[in-house]
Amino acid sequence: MVNYIWVGMTVIGVIFAMANGTMDQVNKALFQSAADAVTLCIGLMSILVFWLGLMKIAQDSGLLEKLSSLFRPIVIRLFPEVPPNHPAMGYILSNMMANLFGLGNAATPLGIKAMEQLKQLNEGKSVVSRSMITFLALNTSSITLIPTTVIAIRITHKSMSPTDIVFPTILATAISAVAAIFIDRYFYYKRSRNGVK
Image (cartoon, rainbow, N blue to C red):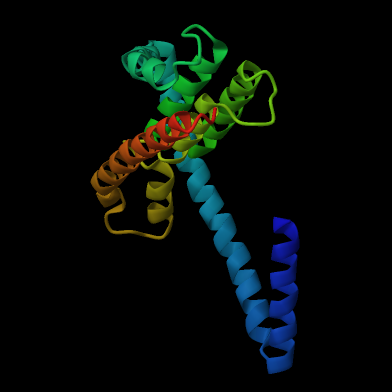
């Protein structure tokens, strides 16, 4: 569906440009956007490779395991339906650690794996489980200590101080994560009181 929307917008834009005689501006913007996209991708790739390398060092040194064990008691309380030693718990913790360091691209496959494991625990039902909803809320609003991708974009666009965004990001994501947990719990208990599972 999204593909059809993008194609539709492109076709409408080209027709509109042809009708107004501004095709030269469209062509210029098209090639400029392509060049900007390549520059942005290379900038993002270099920063992500750096942070993924640091994540690998943290993993090999046992730092990630220690951070995971620090968060494990909280995560177990947030996901009471998930057995503590189930693979889903490991993927949830890994996803949280990747999001903590602002590695959204690295967190995505871990999040998909976690959701697959949670679906297995849900016995393949078409209705999502409490744990799946909680994980989606947490994954969407996760606390980020180092917004790697945003810093990379700011560096690519020659920001004078690309790391100025770190403190506001920590504050905003902490508030959003706490809000997501409260909203998730509010609707869960509301549904439970109404007898809806």
